[in-house]
Length: 632
Image (cartoon, rainbow, N blue to C red; front, top):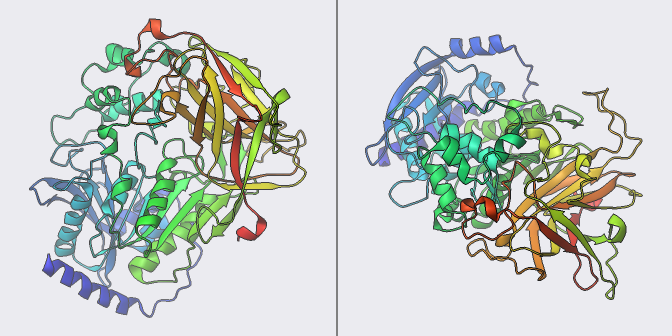
């Protein structure tokens, strides 16, 4: 330990001296073909595969790509994953390395590792590894760095780490009690808490996402293997019909999964936010972080939107003296790495936003902290403002001095900033039928397609089980930023219900087509800006669920996650409210069952739901309006 830290400090000093003459100017990156990129990796890096021992004796399989040019020293960048570090074999190379090809060509020592219990590594795999004293991902990261500093030649003593999605979780866990050599990390679309991200949203179960993931990822292995499990074959693209046929959820195990998927068994055995889920929440453990952090997320990430926002917020609170930056772009899950970031579904964002991110954010971040090159000019928050399609910077997030405004649900489907009069009584009623749940998309899909987050919502406006409230056309632009909160005053004539709220930007009839789809009319397009769902039993506590008392008023306070969006002049603001969102969310039986995953067919009943809009108990959506002076 002492030897490694000493060598780290010495190498860091030497590395800075070597780089002291480097210019901070960087030429714009010009992309090459995939074949040229692949050839560059093969011709300029040497790959070595090793087993790295952890402190408990477990050995983790690791691939190390080292630049062949040994005339200078290089920082190390790690990527730890449960998804396999393929291709395996020292003569088989990845086609690119690191966060982007610009960094590949700039040359770092790139390290990839199968985490404990996955693919070629030894040990037992545990999902969302609880942060316990003797074995956790922070310790495995620390031990890996120690080994690399001692056994890898030609490093400059500085280590970085990055990862997207599940590897983003390992990045966040790795920075806890940071190793002295770990100086810069970038958790990207990181998972924070599986009761609010990915497979649950406020306790509501995202059925296709969980089924499709664990039917493959959750299969047990017999020992270290280079082979990934095959995807589940549904035999159809009609997700609505497929998941209807395995409702109640217990039928998934009965028809397809059996007892082989241990985590599925745990998931359905723990419907509430009990110790099982709380132990897998990384947020309480984000302490003693000494490295610079750049957390990245996508405004339209269908899987992990909660994670980046909450991880940034928690680090900011618990580690106030470090560099802690949040980046949010107009991306789907990992879109900054996997797409150009100019479109998502029908919506166009004006430019290839991923290029901007790679050239101006992630590459300079690692170059400054790991190579001592350039300046630390990245702001506290680098956020893409949808609607106007501009990058904005902020000194803090959420922005300070937001003007909180409530848009009230009014009679005749109106949405207004004017509250109902105190003596005004109003209620909207709809019937929810479990045999005919509201679809979450207008087309067939067997999973949770990324574009649903911006998709046109007008296809459900005429359904009797969907309420909507619409503002007048805006007389000037209105930009909202930060948290969004729905306040619903509700009743039901049964004992259980889910509640779905969508915030929508309704385009005017004059809106032109977008350039990527000139044939598609965008007139009266209902673009979803933000949406969320809560299982109503958790309205007062996620740990202690409660049935609804029939026809007794209850208040639902539902956070919809942060936004930065401009409703342009002439556009309208819409809020939709419904109680089903199928098949993305499993069907609520509407009869309270202690463990909802054990509901029987006879528990599924029709229900009348009531949304109040009285003066003394109004329903509304609350947003923060951003004044022009607050953005840069």
